[in-house]
Amino acid sequence: MKLKPADLLAFAVLLAGALMMVAPFVWMISTSLKPAAEQFDMRLIPATPTPENYSRIFELMPFHLLLWNSVKIAAISTFGQLLTCSMAAFVFATVRFPGRNLLFVILLITLMIPAQITSIPQFIIFKALGLYGTQAPLYLPSFMGGAFGTFLMRQYFQTIPMELAEAARIDGASLIRIFFTIYLPLSKPALAAFAIFAFLFSWNDLFSALIYLPSDLEQTTLTVGLALFQTQYAAQWPLMMSAALVSVAPMILVFILAQRHFVSGVAASGLK
Amino acid sequence: MNGLRPLGREKLWVLVLLAPTLLGLLLGTFGAIFSTLGLSVFDWDLLTKPEFVGLQNYAELPESRLFGKALWNTVTFSALYVPLVMAASFCVALLLNRGVRGEKLFRVLYFLPVVSSPTAVGLLWIWIYSEDNGVLNAMLGMLGVEPVKWLGAKMVLWSVVIANTWGAIGEGMIIFLAGLQAIPREHYEVARLDGATTWQRLFYVTLPAMAPSLFFQAVLATIHAFQAFDYIYILTRTGNGNSSFPTLVFSIYREGFRFFRMGDAAAQAVVLTLIILGFTWVYFRMQRRWGTT
Image (cartoon, rainbow over all chains, first blue to last red; front, side):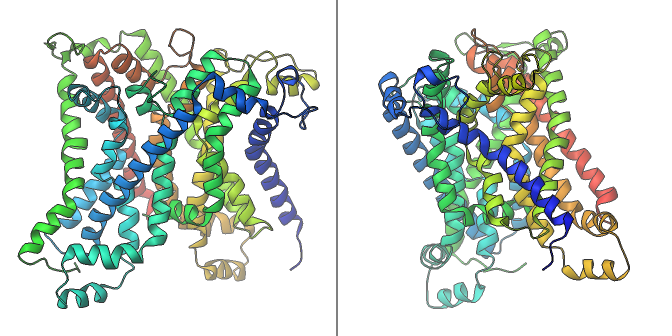
C-alpha cells in the first residue's frame, strides 16, 4: 500500500493526541519516584529515583485498609450486578410474557434518570436502617439489577440459539436450570466484559462513598481516602502521585490484560 | 415475539428471576422519584419532624445566589463540554478508521483515562493547573508566558472542561469506531466511482450513516455533563468544604448530605432531573426530524 501525505498527517495528529492522553500518567510515575527535594525538578527521569514515597504513604494513611475496602466493596457489587442483571437478561432474552418489551423499554429509560434524584431517599432509608457509616449502602444497590448490565447481557443471550433451551426443556429442565447450566456457561466473554465494567464503576465511585463514609478511614474506600490525603498533604506532589498510582495502577493493569473485553463492552453499550 | 412460553411453576421462576430488577425499578427508581418529589415540599433536617412548606423550596431557588451560580456553572460547563468531547472523540475515531498503523495501540492509549479513577487523576490535574510550580505554568514559563491562575475565577470553567474531556474522549471514540466500522464498504466504493471527494464522502456517506450514533452519544454526553462531579469536586473544592466552581450536583451534595437540608436538596434534584429529561426529549425530537435521512 502506498503511503499518502494524508495518512501521514492522520498518524501525526493521532500521535500528538495519544501523547496528551499518556503524558499525565508518565509524569505521575516519574514524580512518584522522586525524593521530596526533587519535586519541582522538571526532568522526566528522576536524578535519584527512590521507592520511598510508596512506603511513606502507607505509614501516613492506612492505605492497606483502603485498598482492601475498595476491593471488597467492588467485588461484592460486581457479584450482585452479574447475578441480578443476567437473571433479568435471561428472562428478557428467552421467555415470552405479556408486557416484556414495555418493561424492557422502561428499564432502558432509567438510564436517563440522574442518580442524584434517587440518592436522597436512598440515603434516608439507609440512615433509618442504621446502615449509615457502614459499607452496605455502597454494595446493596448492586443487587437490584440495572439497565446497562441487563442490556449488555441480553444482547449476548440473544445470540445463543433458542433450540438449546427448547431441547433442554423437553428433557425436563427447569428455567433456572437452563439459566445456570446452559446460558451462564456459554456467556463467559460477556460476563467477563460486564464484570470489568461493574468492578471499575464501583472502584472509581466517589459520590456514594463520600455520602456514606466521608471520613472513617477504617471503613471507607480508596477514592475518599485519596480526597482526604490531598487535604492533609497538599503540595507534597511525590507523595500524592504515589497515592494516586496505588488507585490507578490496578485498573490500568486489568484494562491492558482484558482490553478486548472492554472494547466489545463499550461498543455494545453504544449500539442501541 | 419469540421465546419460551412459561408453564405452571415456571411462571413463579420468571418472577423470581425478575424480582431484583422489579424491586430496583419500583423502589430504587420510581419509588425514589416520587419520594424525592414528596420530600421537595417539606423542610426536613432528619432530626426534627418534617414541616410541610408547599412549593417554598422551589420558590426560593431563583433567589438563592448559590443555586443560581450552580445552575449557571452547570449549563456553561455542559455547553462547552458536550460539543468538545463529541468533536474530539469523533475526529479520533475518523482518523483511526482510516486504517492507520498501530490502530490497536492507539485505541488502548486513548482509552487509558476512561478506566482511571477521576479522583486519583484529579490530584495530578491539580498539579498541572497549580499556579506556583504547576506543570502547565512551568512549561509556559519556558516560552516566557506569565503564570496563569488556571483554577482562578476566570479560567476555572475551561480548566474543568479540559480535564473532563480528557477523561472521556476514549469512551466516545470506541462507540463511534464501532459505528464507523459498521458502514458497508460498498457505500464508499459507489461514492468513489461517482467521483466524490474525501469531504463529500464524509458529508454524504459517513455523517448520515453515523447520525443515530451521534445522536445517542450526544444524549449520553449531555447526561454526563449535567452530572459531572468527580473531577470538578477534586479540582475546585476549597478549605471550608465549598467549591470555587459549584455545580448542581455539588449543590445537591452540599445541601443534602453535608447540611442535611433534605427538602432543598430534593427540590434541586427535581430541577436537575427535569433539565436532563428536557434535553433528552429535545434530542429525540431532533432525531425524529433529521435523523432518519
